Image (tube, rainbow, N blue to C red; front, side):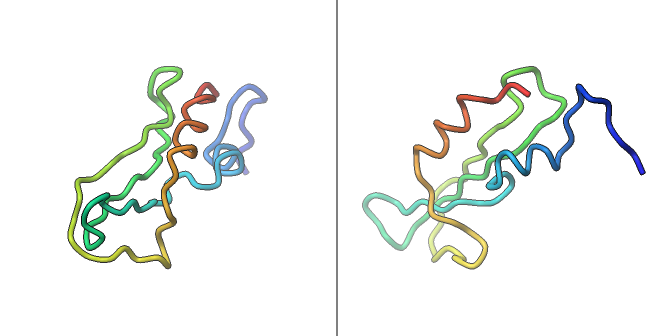
Length: 87
């Protein structure tokens, strides 16, 4: 079994700290409730320091989000994640 050095972080460490990583979040259009877009926080371990957690945002699409897979989006979630991106 591979055991990382004490100073190294693994993806499971990040998943424990940020349980919503790689989980899409949906946001409805402010004027048209038949449209939504998704925000997905992605972990990029080889990116430069401070830029390892990146939020990917799609364009608005027509339809209804799959609430079994996606969670509602909150702006505070993104701002909280941006505060501690150094690992």
